[in-house]
Amino acid sequence: GNGSSINADCNGAANILKKVAATLKFSLKGVSRGALTTPLRVYFWMA
Image 1 (cartoon, rainbow, N blue to C red):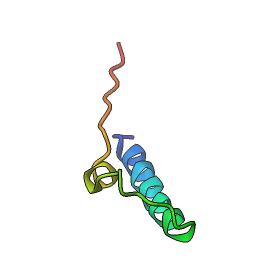
Image 2: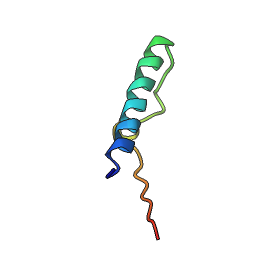
Image 3: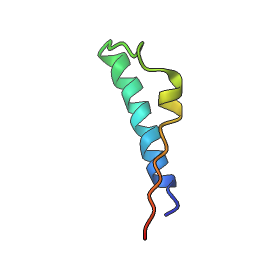
């Protein structure tokens, strides 16, 4: 693939985290919106 499946996994995990936090009344106050919507990009090169 072109990496889009990894990005989809990150976005899915962020959405699950938001739902679980609401259900368990867990505060995401210390997590910025940018961290959830734009996860860190990691590039891998093959030699």
